[in-house]
Image (cartoon, rainbow, N blue to C red; front, side, top):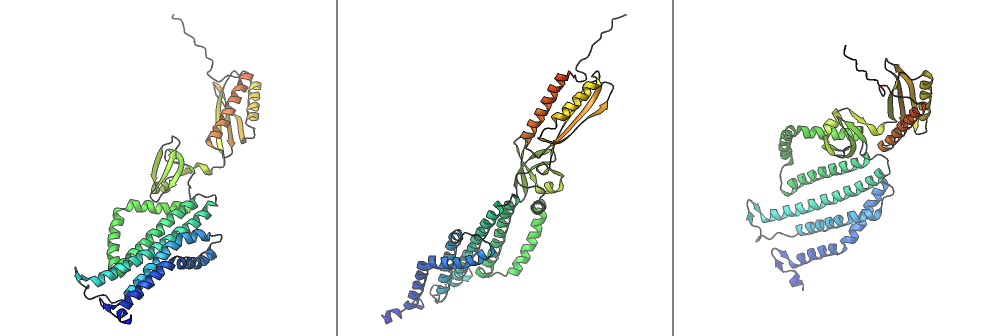
Length: 362
């Protein structure tokens, strides 16, 4: 038996091959339990930072990529202990097959490690989403999505640099110098896109508006449905969907209608000049009573002007921050009640009755 185990195949003994295979098989069998144990250990540190974290969700999300990383790590480490057969060490376009296998092993190991970190970022974003849902500010959810994608991009770039360094043996310093020159050229070509990206950061942190707010920008009024990295999407009052670059949203004067504390309604009545002063006083008193209802917080009714053809009564009233539909209902009720009051007092508007005289020819 020992003679068989000591036999040399491709520069390694059978014993060495058998040990490597047994180690890899053992890790494949127990990887699930090892991964869950390590995930549970990591969970204690995560729970120290964030309370009320679901352990089951964390384990199910992290355990699988962690187990795969452990298997690949053990496989690459144990296989590296074997001697690469000289018979198979042939040149393949300026590199040997041994160097190629080492590069492939490093590549697989780095990819599995970056994948594990990406899964942990997904779990952290889930926790932050749960916390953001407990607040009334919808911008928090948008920030979580933004920084989740941002850190994933950064992590992917770091993983790519690690692959260039450890798998292909490139000098990262020279590579970064070249990338900086290329990046400068790209930045000049994509200046407008970069300005919109910077403007998106300003919107996220300054918060002039949030998703769900009704805003007026330029000549458009609508509801903000999405704040992206390049543009903001608005659903207008005509139910059309417009896209405004974030730079314009930052540079323009924006009226955030959702942040107003009151809504204003006004009415200008031009009463016929033949109306007696007593009737005019009764009309003004009646309008003040109408605008004194509970839906209206404060109002102003006054004889604003006296012209050669009419008495001008100005009616202004303010409601709370109600919706557009509710405000239109209040406005319609006020107008109807004022119209009924004018009919009761027999008050006519200026110009509603006019005599037309046609002179006879001489």
